[in-house]
Image (cartoon, rainbow, N blue to C red; front, side):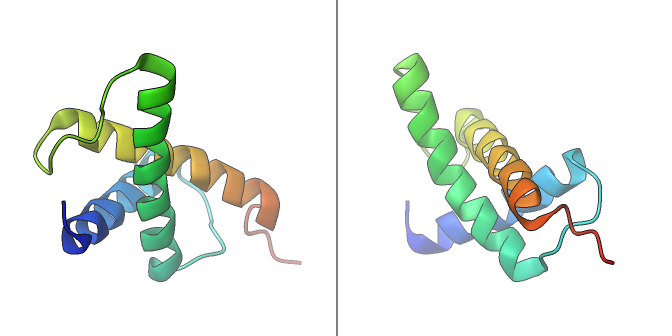
Length: 89
């Protein structure tokens, strides 16, 4: 897949992760895209390591989207823990 496909998957996976994990986050759309892209890579890597499958096959494959969204959710939770959950004092 090309870089544009990774950005689109990352954007949509980041949005889906925020929708599945509601709450205030300290990041905006750029952070969402970055978490989504990194989450897609993390999800694909975890799928390969844990289950021995190539979970990033193509843009329209369900396994690609599931891996990207799960990876994004993991990174979003980690980002919330590191940044304090977006709470303001």
